[in-house]
Length: 500
Image (cartoon, rainbow, N blue to C red):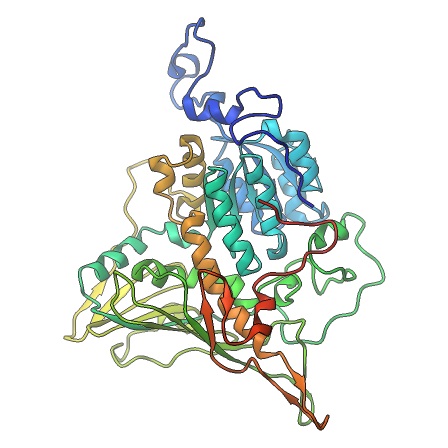
């Protein structure tokens, strides 16, 4: 259930200018006061309190630990509130210790209501099924948001967050940190120079899932951990009993909460071709998935869970940058593409074959790892072009963690919506939203593949979703199988909503 005040994004509920306005305008005191330069007050390296962003972290028992602390940036900003439904997790306890002055909450709605005037920005690193409701509640209050990948649990939520970021004029970033890898720019430049030619096929693959998946639905545990608020953890998801087979981490393999291997890694791996080729909404998708047999001749039917492996083919129309339809082939669960002809013998596949990207053009082959790292281009005429190492930093300057992905977001928040710093972000929702929709198109196909209907004689089943699905991206609709559209969005549990 989202709660929001009636103030505009740049005002508090009392109608007075918010702290966010002060950050954007640099107004530090009334004009009747003498403003002393910061270096006089604090010396070299001093950061004035007015130059610090006040950040709240929601979900920090896992990846959120680095999201909050990379945004904190060794004290360049303030962590003013921390919210997690499970205070018993080791990283939650560690973060409470690291930021002893931060207010502590379990319910993000209570945190936003009580601390809203003190918060400028929010990091959202919860399980996939609560990304959208937390981020939307924050944006409605005019708070900038950093949201872990995948941006949302389903396509509809991704579209709503993308539109809300523009409506509320907030600075956004999705947590696919490879997009801030400077080597991504090198690959864009190679393509723009025509070294690849026209691209027709892209291969993507991952060794995920690395958690139990394709298994029978677990039974609830007899007890719930004392530090965990299970009802809050469920949020808008269908109500089920607690089990350690869901929390922590293993929720990824269940559609009620996660988005499987695609949700975990798709926004990382698909980022490079999406960016290089300037892709938009796909037009069609088709899939096949691995089966599990616990009984002879009888495959398990587990529509609640993600499959042990999948092969997905998504087609994108030609773009202004690439004049050909692109077939994107995704494989997971141990499946991977064979070595392409243009990859010379002895040259390794990306990441020793565990994760990677192959972009096939009529003039060359581009390969890289999961985060766009270690790019190489092989041309038909036998050239090999190796990406430059990451830019060297000046002496004494320490490299930023995760390519500076969170730090760049915090600096853009300080500069404000539509600033040059904001426009320079590599995964604001204008980019991350359509990217996430394309990733989740694969999951729509996978879930449609499991749809079944009893045959007329009652002796078997038919599977209407086991075909090519045609997608109307503008209207978010499968046009040739209406049953598939149930997976575009989800029905929220009573008491929860996504409003804009």
